[in-house]
Image (tube, rainbow, N blue to C red; front, side, top):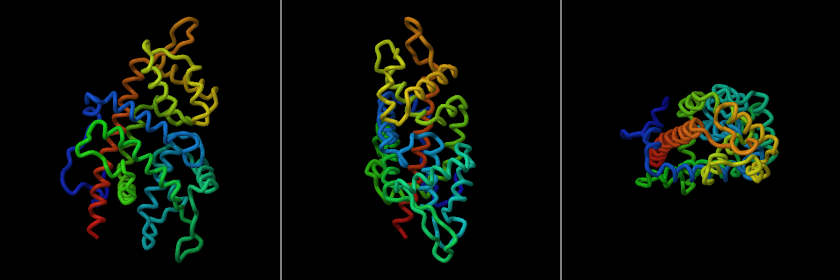
Length: 300
């Protein structure tokens, strides 16, 4: 839901829909790009705090960047305090206040966040993303738009792909306006959210999707996923647990001798393709918001 006029496109823009993305002839290529780019930004040596990624931490990072981008020292309601962060994240139900406290403390230790005094009120500490976190955020933004560029190269998504700092700020000021829609999309599939809430659950499922697609018969073994354990900072037992949950949700089916192989179900492919398409559709929407915000900033 758009609440701010400054984020609405100045001229009507026909939104890209998830259905159109799914029907696009280049969607298989866009899916491959989406998976490859997400793999880069969620690697354990890249993800802020050096944690494994989950939907709660990713949502918290996005909100941190958005809150600081909207910070106005003269308007107390915009101050990016820890309490404001907790209140905002709580709207989406992905992380408890205790988990946010721990995550923020870790981000401060790793140099991704700074706590600074509010001018005129030294009792207040503001959360400020460092350049390290902002640089990761630009990569995270580009990871989504690289897939969209595969589908819609004209006019394309140059500002995002070029990691433009001014666009990043404009995008962050407006992106929070689209969060409700994004979260509603996630919660519309409770089975998928359960897995995404697990550490590196998203990237494990993406790896499963890519691996199955690379096999002639679509079958893979648990052992085939071993190399991703260290890359994303998870244990083999954690991967095993994710596969077990995916099987219980009807995403995977066993096959082969002694049921040692997994195969994706049509339910899984349809659900995850829809997730990717919904993510890209919301990305296109926030890109339009960012362009409008950037245009307004350039005129002031």
